[in-house]
Image (tube, rainbow, N blue to C red; front, side, top):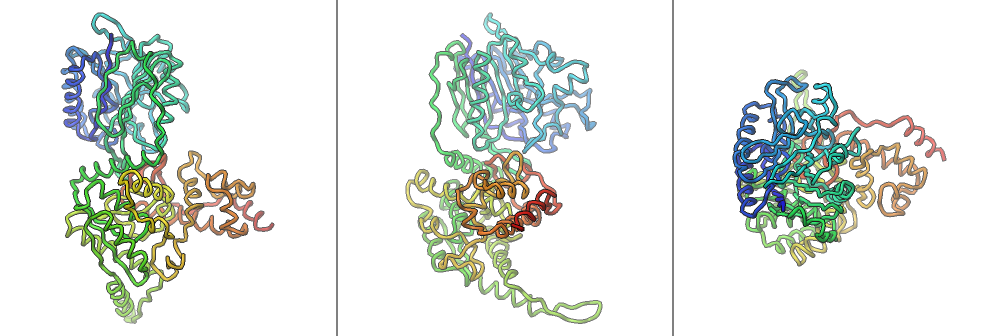
Length: 629
């Protein structure tokens, strides 16, 4: 009876030496458990998100060398693993050496060649070139190879015949995107389906995205059911990045039987190995569908991502500026779980505009967490800065004339934010021996509701892919489930969100941020996360049809509540669109790395250019029509 092991390993991007050690360790474990086959993830040797490290020939040679170590370790066991494959005699379209994203199979120290492939490995057919993926920049696809050879992908894409203990098994080998073919001109899975296979294997390097696992179970379960054979999906865990955006890889490797049932799922964010007897899978009971709320998955992604990010940069201590508001409170509760309260310093930095309410809530939060705490008032420093700017003469060296700067109330707000981050938090972090965080949420990041070199600063923006409503949900989840007690004070959850930078943002009078989160969270989300991104033209069409809330997914009645007239609605829409496509882009470019959890995170996942706001012809027609009514 064929026994197949799924090896869910942590892949450390850019470190083939570390990854190969892990692979060899898992091969020994699989062999000890009686497995005939052991499956590892896509790009298990080099990692996946490497930027232009792929252009280093020395690195590629190392990947080949470590691949040979894995092949040599395949005595009496079939090892399936992902690695980069190099044809040193050929070139990619960019003139650099030819690279393939490849699926290798080794047995008894030798590679097993797919039936019709010109190489002793399977080549990835479908190259994702959207969101965070940039495969066509580096890798030559099976489609391109087929054209080069004067044939078709269907002729080259072929099963691998395995000879194990006197029996022959035919396996269909797919690499990640090859199983997600809905929007491509052909489907590798369907091409292999004609080959009378015994099982499929999909090796993946698939970053976590909220909701992706449910969709994968539907797609891959249907594939296994229609083909009538089991399917093994093996994904890695780990933390990888493309510079500006940081992604967690959750694993969640899954085995589907020939009925399409999920019969085995490996845990999120944990290394694990499981062995399944192929012949018994059809009789295995289907695992119950998870009833966990989305926020539980988000919490695990954030906790794992923060922990691994800190380990990668060797940072053990954290400083957080807390205001008595929800974002900094949730960040504090998160980091306390990761580094421990003894390694967490919370700093409250009140000015004359901070209320006794928020100062008290900050103290209550710190007490609940049992962490280090400081109160450093900033008003004296802010006043000193303003005085220096206004009283120091500004000399025109061409004419010799003198003038003086005038600090407006708006500039004074920015001076407060910069004083807190650039002076206090940066200094405290250096003295404490750690780094300080950026606590921005996604709504603020969308429209640049932050201060450059102020509250936008920090080493990581862990909450910047969460909308405000998700930040509140995370506060409740940590209180109810993670801590099992009230850590984030209920007063912080209940108080109106406010930056408290002026008397116009007095929380005791119910005055807060200009962003109306119950509505704007969903409006801004339509700009970013919809696959067909919304623009003001779309939003005005919905307004005209009376379907804004339905299309955005927000609570009914909010449009009328917030915007009594069409002029009010249009003014609000243009205010935020101008910021989203204007100054906010410059701020996002300078923002810290963002930890991704959504289907579209800022950074490399959402590529944008600084071209300014644009309104379509149809938008201008709709605007004139609505304002004339």
